[in-house]
Image (cartoon, helix red, strand yellow):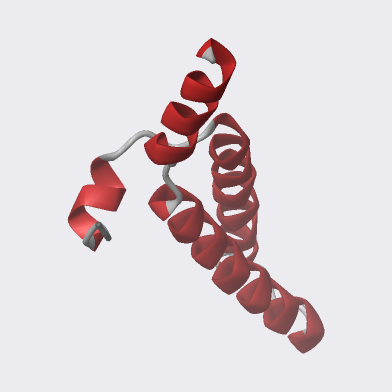
Length: 82
């Protein structure tokens, strides 16, 4: 059975994807700070920060929607018991 987005958002996220999410949030915050800097920065830096912020936001969101597959875990337990 496939889960809808709300169920996926609230389910447990695997450890690896928690790390990806943490790094994406940190990277996005740094990019946001660069974009909000009160000094004039070169256009290339602003463009790069915009792309980094977009990628970081996407990575953080997708890692939150990644959930553990309980069916695989159940199959592994059953095979170990037999």
